[in-house]
Image 1: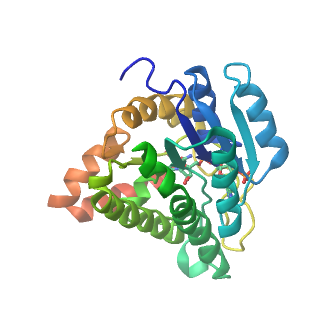
Image 2: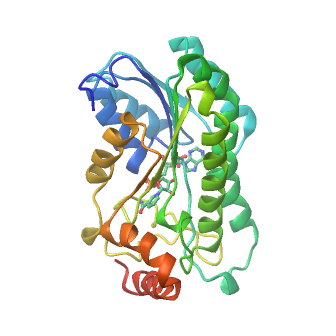
Image 3: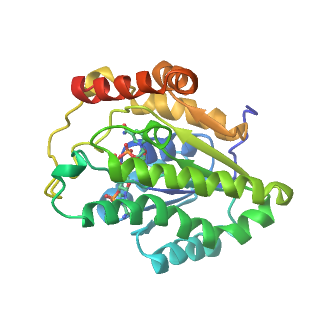
Length: 269
Ligand SMILES: NC(=O)c1ccc[n+]([C@@H]2O[C@H](COP(=O)([O-])OP(=O)(O)OC[C@H]3O[C@@H](n4cnc5c(N)ncnc54)[C@H](OP(=O)(O)O)[C@@H]3O)[C@@H](O)[C@H]2O)c1
């Protein structure tokens, strides 16, 4: 990775108020990127923006609910007004669930997840694309290992992440001649607030993570992997040994991958 790759690049990050998005914002601020940060929680977003301003002058916080097309349009328009273009769009905003499908009481859980994880990425990409074509820029999608294989308790989430993969893999081919590249990120468990906020079978946040958070990848490590991979415009990044091995294993023994996924959920690591 060129040392100054991110210097003065305009990067839009959705879901920047916590977890992976927040850490990515901080690390890119240290590398001199111009940041446009989006999430719903205005206070938390502004706090992240303030932290980033210790390292770079150009930080914009745009409160955005990516489930709404007009708000995604506004995010892109405000970014272009401030920075005159966009180099990288990181579609990272996401919500999840933790419940077996047969126990889910309200289908709205699955609808909401699809709306945020999949349509949120589609809307932001739609409005950013003309500017990305101008800059020969980059699209990044933050998916999950559940976007590669079925994981129990995550039916709606896995479906949204598979949908993201289908969408962005198609764009990669369609956009090849425009110079816009597409990088898909597939993390395993990363220690963030995502599982405390995960919807249970009643649609309410779990409040407590069912995963042994101390035993899974740290958010810093996750972002340390993402930053050079995005700079190298890698096609995709599959994280963890289990994730990488699972890809190969799925070709020869898919039933074994199902067992590994079930065990990961039952043991919480
Ligand atoms: N942590 C993991 O184990 C893991 C594993 C694989 C993939 N991922 C993916 O990584 C991404 C980041 O997750 P995380 O682990 O960092 O979780 P997190 O700490 O809960 O952060 C999620 C971010 O998304 C934002 N967000 C949620 N709904 C939104 C909406 N409607 N509009 C705009 N922003 C919204 C949240 O901010 P507001 O609430 O302020 O809107 C927050 O900034 C997600 O796409 C997730 O699926 C995570």
